[in-house]
Image 1 (cartoon, rainbow, N blue to C red):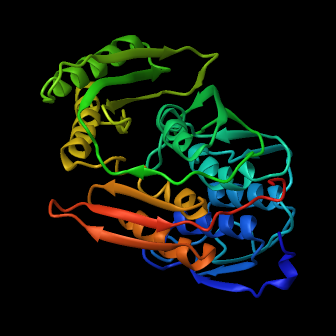
Image 2 (image 1 turned 60 degrees about the horizontal axis):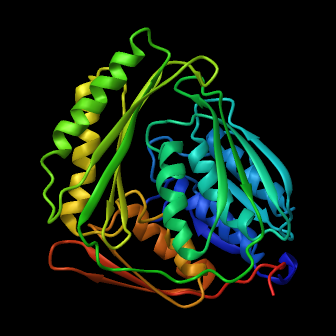
Length: 369
């Protein structure tokens, strides 16, 4: 990797497109990987209340530590930061939001630099494991790990303790080892047909947690029984109740996912938030999954933007069929092109979806041959 001082400072308007935290996470990840200093101004300018919140600060500080960089402007409500990265390094890292801020979003930002570090890494993340407006940590374990394995990526992810709004206090440990080869491009174009549906309905903290989990699971099964496929397939939704040793606070949710004949995996999930019945939560998670299945997509709407950085880093041509393109995905593509040099082409499909194609840059970490 080139020294950061040899690269000009890249200026990024934080209100561009999605204009939220995702833009910041992507910018910091690419900066750490490519050794390019970045200045992000007008941070979260697309939000009613802009500026850095605690989970964004926590994620930025984590990436800065991984790349041995210099981070300026990292303070609560700051509208501008500058990250001057050094060389990626491995070891043990910790990040604690001290709130219910999403640990999954911190992992999303830190994972690419961790994977390309020259030695093994262990990172302990504390905060909200199942938070609103973010993928639950179960999604990272059950879906993200499997999708990224198509690129040749392997990492361990242990959920030690769930943490819910408002106090968080969940604990997750991720472990990575240096990649031995360049990332493999993926071709996810044919959804195939559903061969199995699995899922969990989890609840913790309530006196009737077991009943709530069961009601969510039953509602999800009922809705998913409406799915049609050329073959009969099992629907296995497991109620999960976490005791005090495995969860802090009260919370729950439903996550269901379908496996297809071509190896695709698509997911729908919902939180059991205040004012929502377990039946509503279970049914909505199932409907979310069914919407993606009916779209013909090969990745679900939550995975779209998450795989863009890995398509950009892969060695060769990737192709992924999606449902309707989300603003998060458009933002991820915009900054992937700007910060990595990868070339993307998005072709709309007649049914309202898209096919995303990318010529990756064959990114090579300092420890790779």
